[in-house]
Image 1 (cartoon, rainbow, N blue to C red):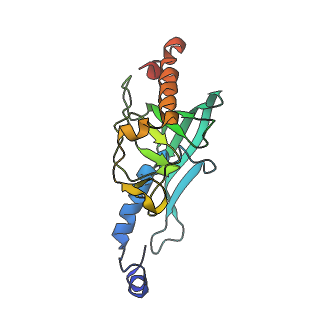
Image 2 (cartoon, rainbow, N blue to C red; image 1 turned 60 degrees about the vertical axis):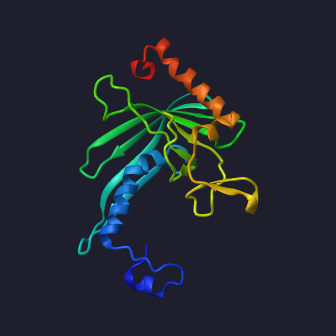
Length: 208
């Protein structure tokens, strides 16, 4: 993120990021921050502060905190992500996260509860592909986020298929790409059974 002076001196890029563009990027990051915590192993909290010119102290604009609610089995976890917004009000999202113990990092996350939904409305989710953090790819069409040790291009903007320099860029992740992974398929089936288990526990949100 270069100022005009830095961009003029840079041999890498002469793109200038204005203050308004910087704030736009920051707003987009704050919107995405809660879901970014889903598959991170050691980062459990993201806070964003902004210090305006002339102000003595920075002001908290956003805070997201991931906390485990329960662990049914070692690979299945209920996760709450609590969000504090700029105006001070709090919201929360409840997730079911299932990981593959045989392949470190592979996992899916299904949204169980979103406080923006009213009554018994089932929360909707446009599934994304993660490689620890979300990749800037089209939505998968699945109602869950999927995390895996996918090969990515050097700029992390596309997937890479094949071996080394002989591979090729995949600009779009199709569901059939995901289904080629036995690990991914097993996780989706496990997620289905875990969600349906809400029928026996009387948990209305999970049952739906």
